[in-house]
Structure formats: C-alpha cells, structure tokens
Length: 250
Image (cartoon, rainbow, N blue to C red):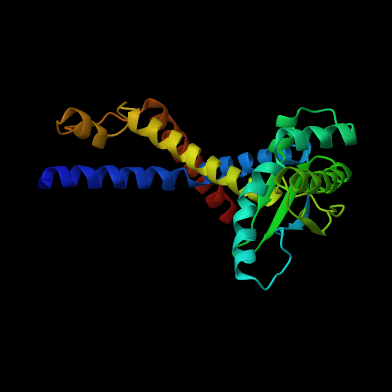
C-alpha cells in the first residue's frame, strides 16, 4: 500500500468519525427510540414463557453404587435415556394423559435435557406459557419416561429425585436483554444509514467539496442573497438600537 492509499483511508476514516460526531445526538435518539419500541414489544406482544425442572437418577440393573463398573455403565446410559425421554411413544403418552392440545413434535421442542458433568443425573426442563402446564408436563414426562425406560431396556427405572415446582418467575423474554439488544441495533443501524447517506451524497456544499470532487481550486465565492439580506437587516436593527440608546442618554 503506497502513501496515497494510506492518506485516502485516513481521510475516509476521519470523515466517518466527523459524520458520527456531528450526528451523535440523532444517532443516540434513534437508538433510545428503538430500545423503547423493543421494550414495548417485549411487554405487550411477546408471550411469557415459564420453566419447570425435574431431575432423575440413572441406575443400572445392579444397585451396588460402590461398583466402578456400575458407575461407568450408569454414565453411558444417560445418553440413551436422553433419546428415550423425548421419544414419540413417551411424548404421545404424556399428551394423552394430560389431554394436551398439541402434537408430539411441538412438545419435544419445549423439552430440554441436561446431564451435569461426571454425574448420572438427568435434568429435564419444560418450557410453557402456563406455569401450571409446564409443572404438570415435566412431572408426567419423568414418570412416564421412567416406566418406559425400565420396561424397554430391562433395567432399574430411573428414580425421580426432584419433582418440578410451580414457577413464579418467567424465564423469557428478559426485558433488559431485549432493551440492550434493541439499543445496540438502533445505534449501529442509524449510524450506518447516516454514514452511508453522507458518503454517497456527492453534492457540492462548500469550497472544500469543489476541490475534493472536481480537483480544481476555488477562485471566488458568491454569498447567498438570503444571507446577505439577513445580515443587512441585522445591521440595521443594531444601528436603530444604538440610536435609541443614544437618544435616551441625552
């Protein structure tokens, strides 16, 4: 990259900085407006989602917990159990038992299964707009899944060690997160639009623009007639004030 190219890049970056600096208040106002709209959308249009969580313990056919082979087998079974818990027969049974108006695919999307590191515990979470529904679903799911796994795999059924509780706080949407995201997007997008508009605009507004776009020096400038008239009127007003002030002194 030669010296001329470096100068052009520096000038462009400086121009962008000056544009943003000049329109800083406008960019900030737009960002705050978008953030407020995001908060309103979150509060009035986005349905709340609640989460209830239950935990089950994976056991092997042999119940000697001190056995190393038993512990290793239990850890391996957790991967199989994760698949079986969200299998079609289990979910359809839960839907039928609770009389839910949904397909098993929809219920599967609301289920999250986690396995804490180096444990044989599975954490089953269910999301739902109704706090009562997510509690009932997660408890029924773990009950049905435990019986299904014990029957199909011919192992000791997983033990429910923690039942789902009625959630009192919604897990999503989170107001402050959405507000920050909208604020960031508003600032970035408004700054981008303003900068691009200013850069693309090649109309001549000053003597510097003539030299920048046409490459020729400015020999003379003709003042705007409106500015000339305004300046003239201001001078007359000042003279009248001086005369009035001088008359009062006498």
